[in-house]
Length: 220
Image (cartoon, rainbow, N blue to C red; front, side):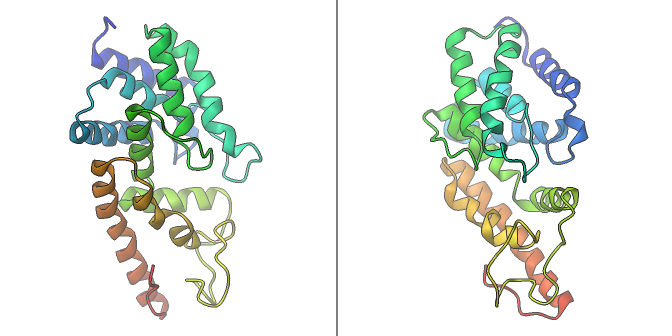
């Protein structure tokens, strides 16, 4: 590719803006910027050097976004991979590289359940999942739940001690149902180390929430 990293990043950010990414606070251009930063950090730790392909995958991984309760939600990453093809061609990627980027995009999603077959895919998946942890993950969790009009927690039993977890109804349930499981799903050592650090932020939040609500802190 002849263009600079700066030019490629500007072009990809423009594509996202034109696709209406900023209408979704949890999957906006700033989210893509952060996934790219996470991906660069992981790539450095894993000695991965194909940064143009990684940048493209990071910026186009959520090209198609669907609400969490949409019936086709599990297909969103595959739809993003398909939609990315003409954009990648326009940016000068060759067919082999495009196929690799498309695989990474399709496989990044938790709900798609597609195995990551390449270092590129593994790094992208880790970089995106780290966005669900730490202070950013906390903010995004409640942004998504608010968009779906879900309560923050079940008032009588906020930490599901006497009822089944149900993160389709309560935002805080999502911490145990998914978010705090993410460090164990990381595909790279660098991603796992970063995820474990950021998971601690969520646990501190839960401890503080328990104090404010007058409940025992959950053993999550």
